[in-house]
Image (cartoon, rainbow over all chains, first blue to last red; front, side, top):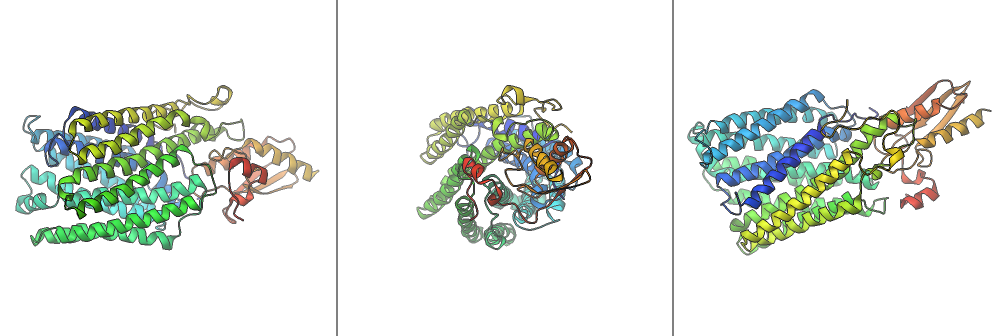
Length: 445
Length: 104
């Protein structure tokens, strides 16, 4: 296989993801959900699922449909499943959120929306898992192994979520009630730690090596990073399920999982430091410089976790811990890489077909890094200040930080739209004869 | 005559750039070999990453550029990743201006 094709619907996934992120940030500014409300309230459930499914999972799926074929140098199992999966995920999420709003009394009673939404989400994620899993399985080595473990974790996350949805609707029996009462940490660890973090780690290995001209991380080295992370998720899911079944409490299981997760993060830091140290490109582009802030946020999340545990304050500060992990590490990395991926794919879609027939601009000619830098800086500064406001229990200050996050995200989204519009490409090279203006929301066939 | 044609083909390929590095495939060292037999051109080339969606476009771009050279009949472009491309293959002057370090 010489080269893979451009994923037609990845841009659609990215656009939907950014829309969900902005909607979630508006909720935070409006004071709906955490920290204005408790973590376990229906409003917070709405917020969390908008961020984790609407923003992070859709962005991750869009990126994986393009990059899993690159990781294994094989075509995607089925390009036709991308759009139906997006439709199922979007509809399922809307129904799930409506169910939560109903649960909280913001909508008339209709708890049946929860299992219906869950079934649609399981269907959508099922298509994603089968499509990507069968593709990655063709060459399960290096970063593709991280993706496979991430997809397995997604299955566990979705299974727990579906049980919760049926239990909240009162149709999961006594076993479902027990799992709902005890199993939420397992759902969260499998989703944030397994699906989102391990997958982001795997994709980042290849993206960083490609964009910095670094040698790929040695398989023998990265397998320890993956093993620690995979064991953390496996202990959480399997050990946690047994602990729930035997009503023995989750403290031991979650403590072992935390140590393994921390080890995985430390080993990942070593791997990433090696990629930076051995890079051939001395100059770092904006996406790489901003990715370093995301890696710093991951390190900060680990240190914050250690500090909170050591002063016995983790349970009451878990919201601040999760906020830094979700918005500093995961969202920061996704935003930085979206900025690059959209430019790269837009270049290929527009100028690839005329290569050899006409002079073409460079990928870097599609972006205006000087202008974009400030939006990323505003975003990261707002996330870090927001984390502090959560730690010191200043919800009003947090809302100001959330406003600044919106400013940063809107600025980044505007830059991405300008990339799709070729707005920063100088005149004569912008649209040579034979090129077609890219569509904002999907790739031309 | 043949070596002159090879030179003209090599010059023509400079219109094809690697989108990521922003420089032409000849000076980046992507073109491993150009051979011409009775107007039939065979080009062996590489790219930075196997499986990258840019690879197919680079191959087509090289084919298009070579086919436009007067005296060229057929063009056959073969992509290979053995030996793997490395930054050492970049023209030294270009390597400095790109801020890319060599392997050795």
